[in-house]
Length: 117
Image (cartoon, rainbow, N blue to C red):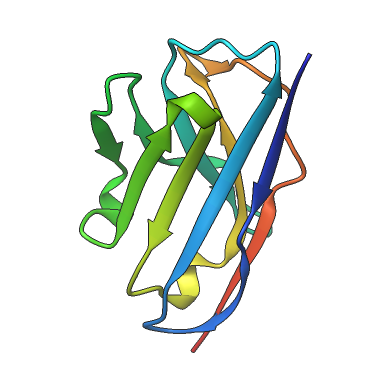
């Protein structure tokens, strides 16, 4: 079983930055993409960014130019650098491995990001 542990969230003012980390432990499939998701209150969880095993990133339009995803495959860790944060970025952020129509692992506890105006 794989455990996903997200960290790095917090309270920040609009325009500020945060760096999220997600460490995976257990029987982790290493040659896979990794992704960051978020879920705001009353909304569905959405994919924010993903990165292939070879390091090619892909971003949702609403974070392009502001967020950067990266990974350290040796550490089974993926990062999300978030700059120019906006109040609408407020959500619980999760990581997982995206699959067609779903994700590979059980969700972790997520990390709360709150951006004040």
